[in-house]
Structure formats: C-alpha cells, structure tokens
Length: 441
Ligand code: UDX
Image 1 (cartoon, protein in one colour):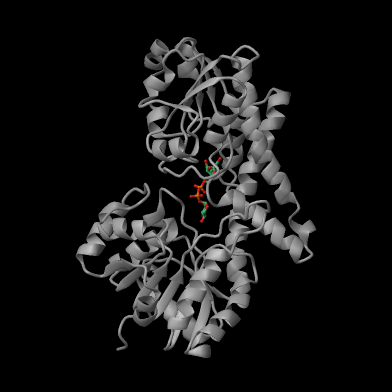
Image 2 (cartoon, rainbow, N blue to C red):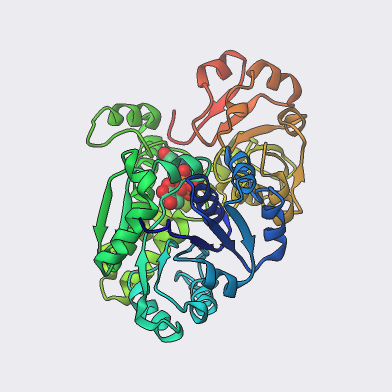
C-alpha cells in the first residue's frame, strides 16, 4: 500500500495549531510552519500559545510520539509534505469590510517555489468565494511541479473551546475539489474522522468556500433574530427568555444559537458576515444578503443597550459610578478577546465616566494588553467590592455559580445587569438584588 501522506500545516494560530496537533495524534507525520519564531519555540517546547481545553495534553503527546514538529522553513515544508494545509488568518481589512487575504497569498507564494513533486494544497482559511479559483493559477505558475500541484478547499467549522472535539468529530467534512485524485487524498487524510461517522460533502471549490460563510451567516442571523425579539419584548412587556424557550421546542427551529443577550463577537462571526456582504456586493448580488447589515446592526445595538441598562441602574448617569464587569473573553472557555462584546461594553462604560473593574478567569492578560486603561481585579469578589452595579458580560460557569448572598456582601448596592441571561433572577431577587436583563420585564 501507498505510504501515508505527510502533512504540513501552514499557519500555527488557533486553527492551524489545533489541526496540526490533531493530525499528529491521528498518526500522521506533521510539520507545522509559521513565520513567528516565538510561537514556534513555544509549540516545540510543548506550550499551546492560547487557552483551549484538552489541547496542551495532546500537544505533549504528539511531540513525544515524534510525529509532530514546527519550523519556519518553507523549503523544508515543500520537501516534506504531500498534503499542505493552509491555516493562516483572514482578518477584516482595516477601513473596509473586506477580508484581508495577504497572509493566504504570502503563504502560497512562500510555499509554491518548493513544490517540486505532485502535492495537494488544501485551504482551510475562511475566504471570499472565488479565492481558490484565483489562487490555483498563482500556485501552478510558481510551483516547479506546475499543474501537478492541485488546490482544494476544506473549510473549518471548529468552535473555540471545543476545538479538539470539533476537529476529531466534526458535524461534517466539506471537500471542495477539482479532481478525483484530490478527493481520494482528502479521504485518506480524514479516514480516521470519516470512520467514526462524520459525513462528507464533496463539491467544487466555490461551493466549499461558500459553505463556511453561509453557515456563519446563518448562525449570526439566528442570534440577531432572537436579540431582535428581545427588543420587541422590552417595549411589549414580554419575556424573551421564555419566548426563546418556547420557540426551541419546535424541532425546525431548535434551541442552539437562540440564546438572547449581549450578542456575538469573536474572530469569526462578525468579520465573516461583513466580508460576505462585501463580496456579494462585488459580485453584484449585494441585495441578496443586505439583511446581514441588519444582523450586524442588531448585534452592535446589544452593546449600547447593555450600557443603557447599566446607566439606568446606576441612577441615570455613569459619571463616578463604580461598575464590576464580570467577563472579558468573547465567550466562556476561551481567552480570546477579538471583537469581544464584554470589553466593548466595559470601554463604553468607562467612556461614560464610570470606574470599571474587570475580572475574567482566562482572558486577563489579553484584556490588559488591549485595554490598559481599564481596572483589573484578581477575582470576582475583588471586582465586585464596593460596586454600584455588577454587570455580567461573559457567562463563565464560575459567574453562574456564584452565591448571590456572598456577592451581595461585598458590593455597595445589590444591582445586577445580566448581559448573558446566565443568572437565576429568582435567586438574585430573593437575596435582595435588583436584577435586570435585556428583553425581560
Ligand atoms: C464560530 C462558529 O460556531 C464556528 O463554526 C466557526 O468555524 C467559527 O465561528 P466561535 O467563534 O468559536 O465559532 O464561537 P461560537 O461558539 O460560535 O460563538 C460566537 C458568539 O456568539 C459568541 O460571542 C457567543 O457568546 C455568541 N452567542 C452564541 C450568542 O450570543 N448566543 C447564542 O445563542 C450562541
């Protein structure tokens, strides 16, 4: 039988590091490639540069097995790999809604001159539809092996906090390919994943690229939908929490991504819907996805509405108010603060004149670097000490589980805004708190 393909992973950020580690754990020989030497040194030393449950143990296991190493040398990557996964970031361009493709282009440009034999390059990054088709020409032109090097697209759907599970047991695999050979290669690489039951959708490059942005747009729309209902509930005197619960029993709707509150953030959903709307406009079908602008606007409004609610509880003005901000990460089980609603709200509260003290179980370092002017505490109780209003911004379990009586003992006033609908209003009210949440009476 043919030898197992050797794998390289270009870009060892969140997606790439997880993919490289999981592929090595599945038994493949893997080389991770990055331009950031400090990151490579940490990975080679067995340290995951971000917070992700379960991943550090797998990294150590993969390094010890001798199947995984990390390098900055693209020539080595070209000589080593049969299948090259492209996992670099595609952030939002500054001053535009479009995706910034410079890292994708530079990774291809750096790798291609070292591809001297038949190889498959597999894009995993989220890109505007049409990117793969365009990059195929570049790849073939720069690679010594020319047309022997093929490009495929295999979008990644992993959630932060569940990255290992989502990589090893994804809901589905999508293979965007141009030949039966590319499909066969991908089936070989993902054999252990396919065997445990993940369905495979085989399609063309353009469809594969679109699946990712369509999925994220749908999820973002679902969140903004329930948050739009929250706005209606507020003026109608209805309860969005109970509304969402009742909707969720309809199996056609389902309860996931129907949690109202402060809305979505992170490194994917916000930039992906903007880049999708931008790309659709370029293609002349902007009207088809114009609703995504509304999805974005509803989501941004959650942040300012949360600030309004805190102001209301603080007695009509934020000037001089002491606010305890519980949470900084864009969601629990993550230290990621990219487009974090929590920090955006903390910043707005401070701009309004409040003294804001932030605590987060994992994201303190990242938050302090990005927002040095906010105050930071080492624990929930320290953040809450003498606070006029406590605002829950990220629904970590330790915040959900805190005893309202204990929290009440340290604050100046028992007033709480539950930005994530994560606390038990009855328990807080029983302990004498004034409890408020968007969309609840
Ligand atoms: C997301 C997609 O889920 C994933 O498939 C894709 O590949 C990358 O983007 P991630 O960014 O890790 O993953 O976060 P996710 O768990 O999807 O949450 C996104 C945001 O939505 C968070 O800020 C979360 O707090 C918010 N959210 C989620 C809600 O406000 N309500 C919900 O019901 C669900």
